[in-house]
Image 1 (cartoon, helix red, strand yellow):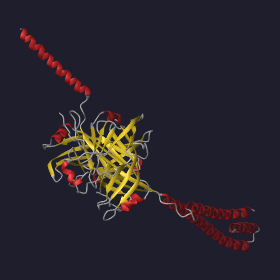
Image 2 (tube, chains in turn red, yellow; image 1 turned 180 degrees about the vertical axis):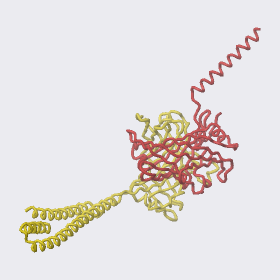
Image 3 (cartoon, one colour; image 1 turned 90 degrees about the horizontal axis):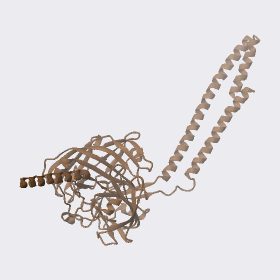
Image 4 (tube, chains in turn yellow, blue; image 1 turned 30 degrees about the horizontal axis):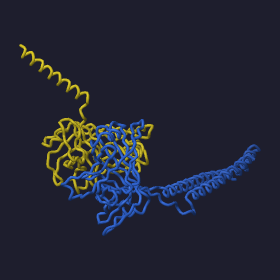
Length: 230
Length: 310
């Protein structure tokens, strides 16, 4: 299966057998960090102000901005919790995310929702802040496995995502940079962006598939020859 | 002082008891009791005074430190933005841009590429939220701007960084919603990727210079602050799935296009407090005064103890 993204804007799809949806926060939507006890914090994505995407959605995405969506944690106020902050030698930090949540995506045409909603579980793994190279870069990502995706609509990309599950990756930045330790002890709020994507098939799997296909083809040719000879 | 008198009286009473001077001994005991009670009260008062002095010193030191801290605390003013639906970061070899247009939305956003989604600092203002902007070459609004980046430095922890060759007259522009614009030169940039948890995140940093604000029919106070304050900086973050490194992005042709967000920030450090009295001098003076008072109080107690021993 190949999703062709002619004139790709928000990066829908690219590779064979996989697809991706890039998304960007709408006006008023932020990722906000708050303290939650010693060495622990929370983060939550707020809904947009409704000026572009309809509430309670937070962001838009897709090659033609044909999707709106939201990421809501199961903690208080839709938050996700994190703790166990680890600092690497280079100054980057990682923490374990302790709360699950829900991903929701719907199709729309810039004026109204047009399709059924895709829903799925978010099982966050880690959150990370990078070391401040070349000035005070403060950026971070967190990735997650999506599971239990369900979708009954007809949008081909959402159908593909629901059938294959995938990953949700979010990036954000603070300027000046902030560490996870600071975000957990002081808090902060900023803009964000992200992608939802399915993993590309492994090369070895593809090669094995082609090899098997070749063997079957060879077998058929040989059998045909035997039949003719007989 | 009183302690020494009490000690002397106690010795006197002891002598009387040994000489069987009953009446004098009884009188002595009564006077000794009165003096002991007075001594106890004085001792307690001394303790309380010492505590008060110590507390006062603590408050003075804390207040001084707080005063000093407040004077030095920096304020960060940030405009956080996201790419519009019409825009994405697009890599093509050693170049990237923020272009991309959805015809259905051209009327809505024109050639703008970013919009302010939130802000912090600026005295709690939110007057910039929703404002639109774009990156451009010179003042040509919305013109497609392509940046090139040079040799990539690879670090052992998965971080890859390259210096970006920016056109000399590259600008970022934000509209104030009243017909006016805030413009700034993009002075320099780096692009970096890291893959520390199996996912790529990248960022672009640049310093802004020559920040100029030309208000429209009304003015945006946030823009006034940015234009008149210290030089702000701008950071853009983006995320590309599939774990491509900067090297892979640079060699893969036009194959990566993704969403982005960013922050334009300035860190304002308030001017130092008036030279007289400086916060640190006040604290030092207060501490010295406290030390002298505590020393005197301690010496008084020691003098009393000395007289007792004599």
